[in-house]
Length: 138
Image (cartoon, rainbow, N blue to C red; front, side):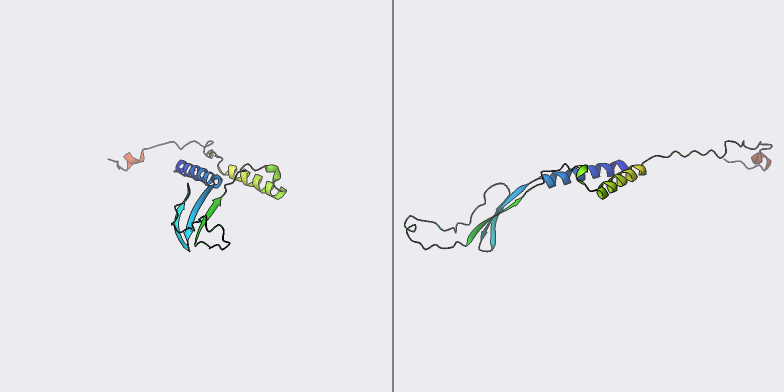
């Protein structure tokens, strides 16, 4: 059971490091206030209601706002994972060393030796009590 918990903790910490260092992008296309499409890998499909610009309308200064808009959500992962022990304050260093020392001390095996009877010998058996009382285990 202890090995299973140890392996489960190791796998969960590995996934934690993986997901904190991973960065990804979500592309979304909105038509009005309604989400039409989203994608994690490539450009999204549009609803087809974008304003088409023609060469004749380039001459006019009147522009129409489109009801469609594209949003891009970018989540950057952590790049610097190596923390230096020297960058910590004195109180933090003291806490970490105390914590590690007490944590390691929890798993020290202490061998218990029962030496209280080493100077005493067992009493001599004068008569066998089971024969004397004629009680036998079958």
